[in-house]
Length: 115
Length: 111
Image 1 (cartoon, rainbow over the protein chains, first blue to last red):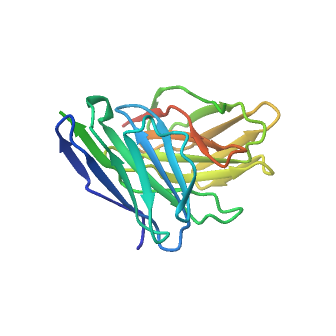
Image 2 (image 1 turned 120 degrees about the horizontal axis):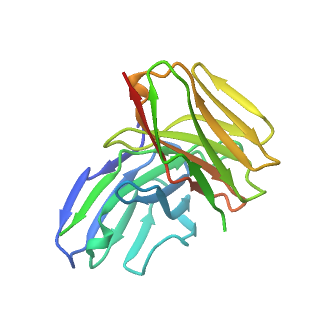
Image 3 (image 1 turned 90 degrees about the horizontal axis):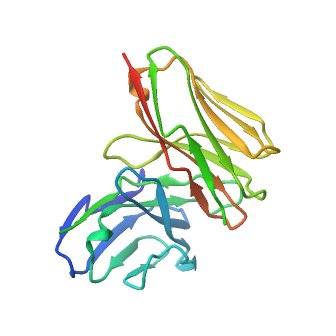
């Protein structure tokens, strides 16, 4: 596609429910990143994929958070048993994965509200 | 670990004047420094970037300078326009291949 797309654009859920967020990277990009942005804050790194593998999961805040990527393209971020502090904008970015082409291109984000 | 400090957190500039945002970093292995602009309700968009082998880069009204010795880099916007109003984030790519972002600067251009 022309850019990174994310769905849904907005999600309201009740505390304790599971949610799944989707990211479609730019076609051909092998690297994919998930970030979390709380209201008025900077971007917090969550996880990074190179192809289908995740060499860096260091940013996942708890074991309620998990992510997967299949086919080297679409990725899903799953939050189990959501808590109110999970409310934030979840941003996905992709890059070519090639040396010297580090630019990350961001999607519009999914705004998650946990009631 | 990596740390990026960004100043100021808010900046108001009269239309037509210049705006400068500064960032400092701690990872001496950092070699790539992008700047992103984020408008309300949208994802961050890359506006300019610089690599460690260059001291300055310019693209029309936007320029970035890098001082590797002092570990700081700055964004300069000249002849500011109302559409420049947004939140700006600096970032650095450290030795672990992970982007670390500054905390953002909310720039307001006063017509």
